[in-house]
Length: 293
Length: 156
Image (cartoon, rainbow over the protein chains, first blue to last red):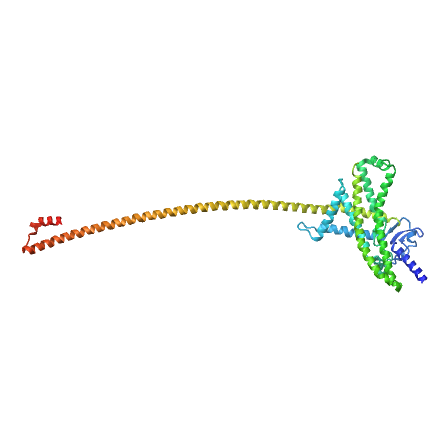
């Protein structure tokens, strides 16, 4: 009994660990070559690196994050571009209506939150909101799905379908926002004014810390919410998993089902809310940067 | 939580998507909406214009109807008076005609009465002569007694 419990524990931590590892393609110091992390894929022997994920340095790419985010981006922006291209003059179709609703929604958010003149803010808000939303929606797919398909045939053993749960992606978005905020600030206050605001007025270097931390927080807020949501899905999935391990654990099946459903329903809110919050904060920061005070 | 070169890949991807949105998607959406807005605006204006025109037309039509009505009533009045006039004229004419006919008839009657009287007088004179001659049993010289007879006849 104790052994079984210990086994379960090992398997559980393995399971969680497995679900938190990205499909990584990177530089391996040991062999001085590029390749996928050890045992992550069975596609090509020559691409299998001797290094584990943890042994790869900075020069590693999370292929699943990149693939999923670009794929979703092409899907979403392609959809909008296509609908716009086929937009007719007269009465709009249903898809056209949807596209215009989204446009109006984001347009009104921008026009109420941003009082500057830059033409980049609305497209930036649109792109970030929809891209993040499409990422976050991946969280509602069953956690086991990607691995199931991966092991069933594609030869990829590690694949995280949620780009938001990889800190690199939200951080990249926040970095773009930070660069734009800096540019806007310099535009309105001049370089001297901006630096003065950053290091001297009113609380000295603390202002610089707050400037950086608010952008890091922008990324971490998004990342943390979705990562935690994913984590809870994984824990619930483990509850399901007990079903196959011993008869006494079958009782967990029904509560697991209910909890999964409940969490998924609740998570829809977080999925949309986090995308919205990111967009609104982006608009607010850019507005703050482009107003004199 | 490990930050690596994925960050740059995501950064580039995001910049590309923002640029695509900025360059193509957002303006085309805005232009479609602007066009639709203009179209709706035009439609509303046309609707209010046609409403105004309809009101004008209604006013115009009621004005025309009123004019026609008043014209009709004056025409009816005129026709009525004309009819009365015609009737009067006809009556007058008929009366005159009747009078004329009556006069002719009366003169005819008078004439024929006179004629009859004359005839009767002549016949009477003849009869008188005949009677007298019968009484006298002799021929009365008509020419000799003509004066007397004529006298007689005149006294009749």
